[in-house]
Each structure stands twice: as structure tokens, then as C-alpha cells.
Amino acid sequence: MATLVLVRHGETMWNREKRVQGWAPVSLTAEGHRQADALAAAIDDRYSVDRLISSDLRRTLETARPIGRAVGCEPTPDRRWRERNFGVLQGLDYGELFLGYPEFTLTEVGYTAATARPEGGESLIDQRERVIDAVTDLVADMDADETVVVVTHGGPLYLVLGWIKEIDIVATIMDQEQGNCAINEIRVDSDGTFTVERENDTQHVDSDTEEDADSNE
Image (tube, rainbow, N blue to C red; front, top):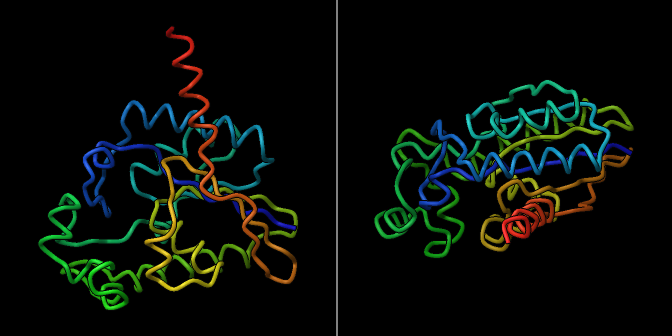
């Protein structure tokens, strides 16, 4: 049995400001670095990691580096694990996006929004094909008992989990959640069956915050 551990990057300022990040070279906040350190400790405690892969964007690489130091694996960048390319919409806040460009809003036009491609960017369907290619290629290359950690973004996590659960693209985006530095553990059986063992687990981040608060009392 192989294990695939998919994690989201730490908090960025654009996360706080609710802006469309896309492929922007946004760095982690101080809180994001704290989250990444807590994630690294949790990964090191729970898993014997054989390989570490990361989206090649700044926020994911900054999250991957402390994991790499903790588990003794150098992160291997793979651009297929990037967030969606929003093209000219990158940098807008969510209100500007949803009010100004309703054709990209799943709650307004449903599946049609998933096929809409912003100028200079990719559609949600385009991104799903890219990400599913990445995960299927990775699993095909994994040893039977290997554990691989992938540091990626909210969008790819929704898409992989939705694909495994066989839910439609609208529910994939609207009915799932992923916190910063969330852990998602997927068992990969020898017959290629995927089983989600852990999903959107942020206990390590939350407990670390509680410990910091207790120490400041």
C-alpha cells in the first residue's frame, strides 16, 4: 500500500485579503511560516516520507522547505501542481471577480463557469486535466509501499479529492474546504484504488495556535 499526502501551502497576504492568487509570486506571511513549521513537524511525526514534491510557485516552495528539512527530502518542483492560471483576473479580490465577471462564478452559471477561460489563463476544466495528469503520473511511478508528500494549493486539492469521490465539478469546488497547511492522506492500493483516509486536517496548525496562546497568558 502506497500513501499520498497532499497538503496546502501556508497563509499569504492575498489569502487574508481574499484576492485571486493564481500564479502570482506571493510569499507566506509570518503566520504562514508558523503554519508551515507546524505542518513540517506533523508530517515528520506521522509519516516516513520517501519523496517530496511541490508546486513551483513561491508560496508552495516556502511551505515545502521546512518539510524537506524535517524529513530529509529535497523538494522536487512540478508546475503541474500549480493553482489555476487566472490570467487577467489575477489580483482581483473575490468581490470584484464575482460581481464583475459572473461568467466565472459557479454559483451563478453552474457547469458553464467551469469551461470559461479568462484571457491569458485557463478554465477550471483545463486545470483539472492538468492536475489529474499529475496525480495519475505520480501514482504510476510510486513504489508499492512508498509515501510521497505533495505541497500544492486549494484548487488542485479540491480537484483531486472531487475526482476520487466522483462528484461533479460544481460540488467539487463549492462543497469542499481546505485550510492553510491542511493535510489530506490518500491510500493507494495495488489495484489503483484511491481511499481518502484523512481530509482537510488542520489540527496540527490549530493546536499550535492554542499552545502559543497558552504560553502568552
